[in-house]
Image 1 (tube, helix red, strand yellow):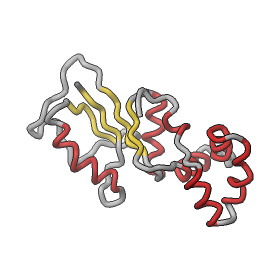
Image 2 (tube, rainbow, N blue to C red):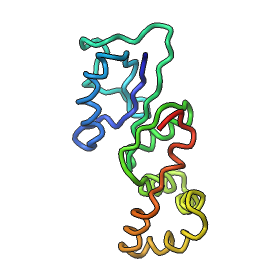
Image 3 (cartoon, helix red, strand yellow):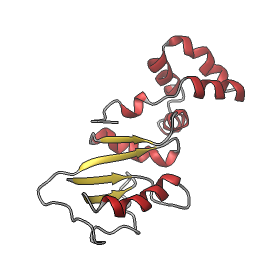
Length: 158
């Protein structure tokens, strides 16, 4: 089996990058890791496919594995997952902040609110609107309505 691994790469700024850096040497013992990148094309300088593990099997398409968390570092990974479906590993219960960053990047300020309503129905809209002005309402929204469906909708598995 071949795998393409998509994760933040800077261990100083991401726990998921640190997790990837620690896990990949063990994963390479059972699978060929074809690529390790952050979704925008940057490769991990600390990773090498020839570090004593299995080399990618020629002619076998790699399974993309996308590590998605609630941080803007994950936007390129999410956007890459839309181009080539694969396995999505969620590292946070709620991806509300990621949805808000996506809305900002796309200059569609209401997108994240629409995503919340699509996942939970229009009855959540009042709480979503209040959450912008109240930390208590924001915390309630995130705890009761963890947003994740938009980020796994096209996945082959979660």
